[in-house]
Image 1 (cartoon, rainbow, N blue to C red):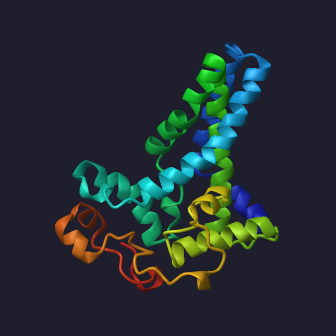
Image 2 (cartoon, rainbow, N blue to C red):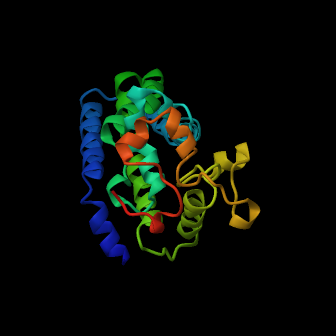
Amino acid sequence: MTLRELVVAYFQYPAIIAYLLAAAVSVGFYVWRPAPLLNTAAAIGVAILFYPLAWYCIHRWVLHSRWMFKVPFLAATWKRIHYDHHQDPNHLEVLFGALHTTLPTIALVTAPLGYLIGGFGGACAAFATGLVSTCLYEFCHCIQHLSYKPKNKLLLAMKTRHMAHHFHDETGNFGITNYFWDRLFGTLYEKVSERKKSPTVFNLGYTPEVAERYPHVARLSGGVATGHPVTRIRR
């Protein structure tokens, strides 16, 4: 895949179109009721700084939690937003998060901070920043999962770390575009030789034994992910 082909494919995803439309609407509301310039800049800056931390926390302690699949009304959500992605990292239909979970999350992470800084206009500016940041994050996520090898060293390092997260040890490298918090919390690893291969890298701890007690995800998935994805038949 060439970079051109990747860009064309990226802008065809409904989720990306939805994020860009939502950002345009948020900017429109900002124009209608703007915040002072300094407050706007501060709201945008805080959103840019806080968003990677929020994503790290959600990725590590929510998506990689071992409690969501135990709750019947959360099992389907956990399966869709992360289990399916890990049991087959190359399954592009679940590459992007579900909009009914991502849009509220982006709003909750960014808008309240923006409101505290600049009122309604600040909230709109921060939310739009979160949406654009998500588009950037998803573009890098596409690079990491599609058959494209980036020439840029930074993007290549991102892809190497993320592939290690998916195929070697899922308990590290939680960042996608920003690994500062991985460094700070000690979850970053540069080489797979630094860690033992995780036996739960594809099922996130949802093993056949666990499924016997909490069968909700297994019923929806037609079983439990075991072994490397290439050895399994996608259902």
